Image (cartoon, rainbow, N blue to C red; front, side):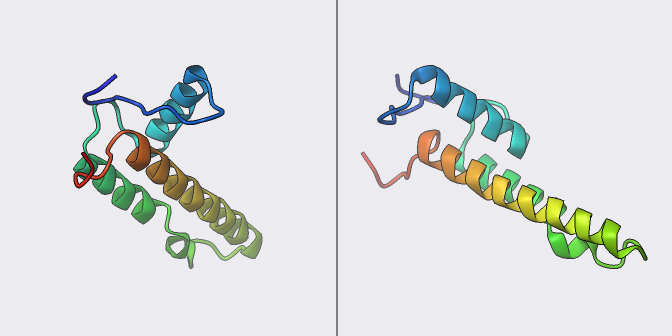
Length: 98
């Protein structure tokens, strides 16, 4: 399969598993197919800005609430990075390849 939205085969993963991972990654970044490299980069920057843990400083006087929000933002940052890595590898390969 070639063209926008094409997914390369990963050893040890079924097509259904790959599709589920791609769908989840697209949801995290707020994207829909087809995806370009520019779309991926822009979505990553927007989501990282929105979920930057330092944005939660001084939002509350309750340390427990701040700590929970900070940890959630930290986890989301990791999920955003992982989603970006997956999608950039599968859907928008380097233009130098080929």
